[in-house]
Length: 344
Image (tube, rainbow, N blue to C red; front, side, top):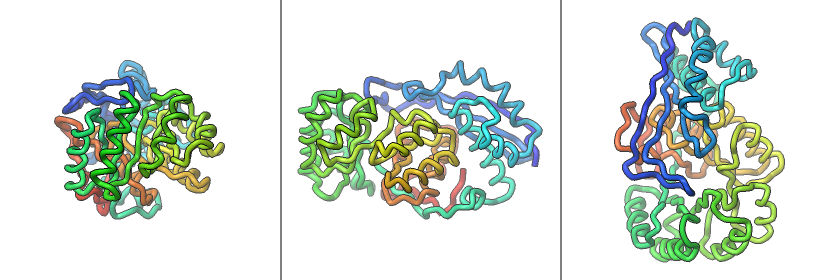
């Protein structure tokens, strides 16, 4: 099996509504599809562009097209995967993820093996997913969550810290009042609170049975101080900038939960390594997309299935887009994504 052709194709996915997180508003998601060919077989990976999360720009990514083509063309896919591990390249993490996914996809397509078989791992038959509530309006949030429950979703991530804390508290209280133990509540502050605000706000949230809060402050080194003032578990998201940072956070036991975005951290195999190290350190992991298209979501779902976690993962983001030209293998149903037929 030798890669005979390499293609890079840009894509743009428009959000049904502008996606707001922290101080950022995205009307669309951009990226590139990397396709490798062997005879009639192809493998595809997604290069995710998400500059607010520190990825290179589209223009910067294009600068690596020539190097990547040379790295892939006329080579055996197994050798390519080995070279990715040994770091004999200078690709950004988002590019490395796409190369790994495209090559894994090609091998699976040619051999009929699943990603789990190829990576010699067991995998979960289904993966539990969460949904996100970002509205500032408490009553609208209640209506949204009611629909989510009807669709089988029981884990709800509520976006906070983009308005007043009073409004956030009202929204959270109303959700608990209406749905009680029917839902698991997790919060996401997108690093928008100062340390002083977090010290003030977190104790006021303790009575609402919060599973965890993502990135309450920008600097994860402040988690140690916050933990002395609240039992609410703290999750690292935005500060998980790259593979080495993730390892450092684990070694120093900084977060209670680590949010892993495979396309931003170098791919499935690096994400699995991070998850294993986190588990050994007593840190939970949650796999999420980086607002990926259908191709990128495959890698995130595969990662979640291979870590066999009982937690809900942030993988049901396909419904945020108006249209995706690529087939979606993993559409959530009754709160889960079926991963029996695992494909990447």
